[in-house]
Image 1 (spheres, rainbow, N blue to C red):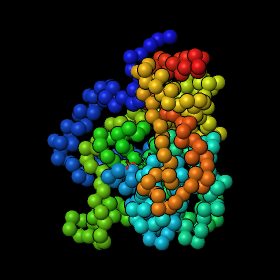
Image 2: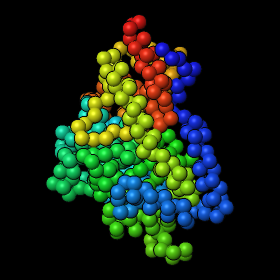
Image 3: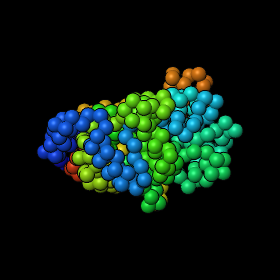
Length: 372
Ligand SMILES: *Cc1c(COP(=O)(O)O)cnc(C)c1O
């Protein structure tokens, strides 16, 4: 077996070195043009990203959390309304709901897909429910047909949280087109990542696109003409130019992630629980999450002693965070999410990882189980 000193969880420095020429030129051109706020690079990226997601509009915003809250706000979701979000996600999903004054209602996840459990969805819908935010967690699209069915029956908005799923497909359709609006994060570690905070909303709705664009830019029509009060949450020129360069590589990085996942699947399926993938979806493996048998802490230590970094996504599902203590949730409210939190483990996966590194990771894990 080939050994490695280190297998990092992600390696943004290595990625930069591979595209350094293009990237440095793009950054320099923003500075030479002084196109820091708005301008050509932002427009170019918005157009390219709309094309990539096959939507009519992509609107750059400051980050993925704002993409969600701005979408909710511009759809008129407000205090007194309820919004459904999955019990296992990053806090940003539910935070965006609270940020605009609405109440978050959590729904447990499916034990196989880890996405929102559409069998438990209808019970959570009340007269106050205005929207559902499915998260395409770890890069796998949520069960959208069923979810959209409930949304239509109860007249609810569907806003996709696609922060982890750039380029994922659901029955051949790109995430970002599956709801009324979709929210992307370009946090540096995401599949498409900026060199700082950045985000975008995609939508096919013309009115919503205009409203979001204005709201995220001080409610502005032009420089000092403000139709309403908004906020300042813009995608900046440097991040847009950086994203323009990276978007050209995204599909090849995604393909690499999927190859790494294939190696993991094949070599780990008899020692741990490997990811289950819904039929007819393309998973983009933002994270490769296994369920560990036995002592997770020991496995993490064993991997770390062999130079392999891991992560847990997420150690505490949002309903059980102190931040949501006011909701007084108990483990039995979300038994699946609660049960998974001590078993899940995320293995290294990224667009610059080699097959040899993936084989090494699987060998180290197999050793652990064979010795134990
Ligand atoms: C990263 C992430 C966000 C928020 O993105 P930021 O750009 O960091 O604000 C939202 N939802 C999910 C599921 C995420 O993983």
